[in-house]
Each structure stands twice: as structure tokens, then as C-alpha cells.
Amino acid sequence: MPGPIEDRLRLLRATKTHLSPIYGTITGPCERLNELLDRTTDRLPIAIVRDEEGVEHRMWAIEGEEDVSPWLAGESILIADGHHRYATALAYRDERRTAEGPGPWDRILALVVDAGTEEVAVLPYHRIQIGGDRPTGGRPVPGLAQALSAADDLRLRYGTVTKDEGTVVYRIHSLRGEPPTVLALHEQLLDRVAPGDALRFTHVAADADAAVRDGSAIAAYLLPGTTPGRVRAVVQQGGRLPRKSTFFWPKPRTGMILMPVDDPIDP
Image 1 (cartoon, helix red, strand yellow):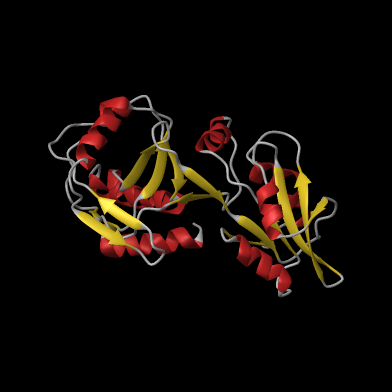
Image 2: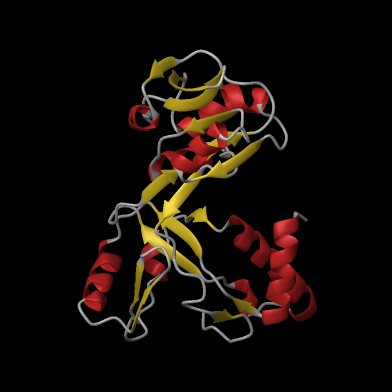
């Protein structure tokens, strides 16, 4: 069992509580769900929290006991963020089922977004390369801003930052095939030139740039964002995205809603 999952499993055993939701999307649109949410958000929220990044989180309680699950019976949920939390919940569920049979541990706390109704931002994780072979080729551009603006998921274009004889150089590169660019980049380049533990990840382009400038990295790869539809297409075709491929934003605030595992939940 991977280390992050084992750590989370120990925490779940100790607290018997889901502390943070997984973030999932459905294709949608689901008009009945959209109407329910519109009616609900016409009222004042029951809680408003502003986090340290300035993101405002607002929470409403849905009145009544209307069962929304039949509305989504034909949908599948794409886990956008929280894969380790989901794997942890499955491991915990298996433990409890073995000892006690079915129960509330068969459920997980989740935020599900209708991508057919709401525009879901899928931001990139840029790659910082600390070992392996440096990238070559590409078309030079003047600076970081130009490299970022030229990155294009549909056209499979990405930027790189390297140092040539002490001078920081920015370039634009193109890949072949279909988006998302991050998958094509790994398949066509990174899995070969930066194997093993040679990559670090950040969603802040300036941090990737700084790592090359201060000499802690030999290259940075500046990636474009993508769309939930392109991510879903990879999964539906049986593919898997590389780790740290997408940064869904904004994220639900950890601890704003808690789900005790031992509380009974009506199906």
C-alpha cells in the first residue's frame, strides 16, 4: 500500500471521520439538480469562510429530504481530486465489511460538480526536472509570459525553461496526437528523459521558473490547462493520466464538512 494511503488510513481509523471530500465531476447537464441548487442558493448560506488564499467558501443546507440519486443514475463520477482519499476509503470499507458487514463505511464524503452546468477550471501542474536529460529543440520566445501564453492544450503546445551557458532560455514545443498535452508530453518525452523520481510539480509557473534560475532544476515544463471532457475521454478509453496532471480549482475546504463513518446513513 503506498505511503500516502497508509498514512490516511491510520488517520481514518483513529478519527472514524471523513475530514475532506473527494472532488468529482459528472458530464451533465442535470436540469433538476440545477433547479434544486438555484432554489437553495436563493437563501442565505449557513456558513461563509474565507481561507488564507482569499478564496471564499459558502455553504448551504438543502431543505427537505428529496432523493437526488435517481436524477444521476445514468452518470458516472470522474474523480478530479482525491484519488488517495478514495483509495483510503475503499481500504477502510473493506476492513469494516470483513468484520461487521455492510454499513455507513460503504459511503464517502464527496463534492460533485455538474460540468454541463458549471464551468470547471482545470489548471495545470507544471513539471520541474531535477535529473535526467535536458529537453532540446523548440522555438525561442522572449520570456516566461510568452511561454505561458503560447501553451495550448488543443494544439499540444507547451513551454520549457532551461539554462544555456548561464542564460535562462524560454522555448515553445509542439507534440503530436490528441490532447491533453500533459499525457502526450509524458508518453513522447518525459517518461524517457526524466524517469523515476526526476520530476517535481507545482501549479505556480513562477516557482518552476525560479527552480531553473537558482540551479536546483535543469528544466521546467510549462503546461496548458485542459478540460474535464478531455480528462474523461482518456479514462473512458481505458487510459490513465500521469500523476499530478490536473489542478482543479477552487477546491473544497478541508474540515468545513465532516462525515463520521459510524453514523447511520439511509440509502
